[in-house]
Image (tube, rainbow, N blue to C red):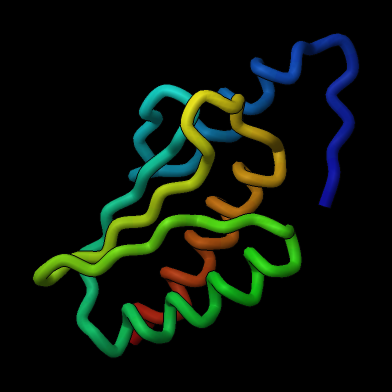
Length: 101
């Protein structure tokens, strides 16, 4: 999915897109999300994220600690790309799918 943003800087529309992703925190050139999910939901989420990340040729960091899963998207000092923001949106979709009743 691509959208044309005529006359606007890339940074502006990435910031706008990030503002729509509730729960994601920007840390420099990375974004992070912490999800409180159980082990089965973590496993299902990880599989769904892997499929999307492979299609986008990206590698998010996913870690499990106690009762929560932490996801990081981005690479150190390299600016976020539209693909990474798209991945974060797809992670949100996957999260909703694995936590739906």
